[in-house]
Length: 70
Image (cartoon, rainbow, N blue to C red):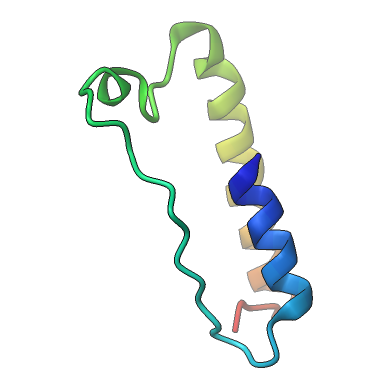
């Protein structure tokens, strides 16, 4: 939560785009976090596949309409 709060504070306080704030948060010195970091578990696989397919369809539709990211 601290990172989200800091990001929101920066969103409202930054005077120019590209402003960066370094936070004191650090990854744990323990290696345990690596096992679960970005892990796709079997119970979430179908949902993630569906979201990916939905995203690809939306991007194709946006391309068809001439909409692009800047």
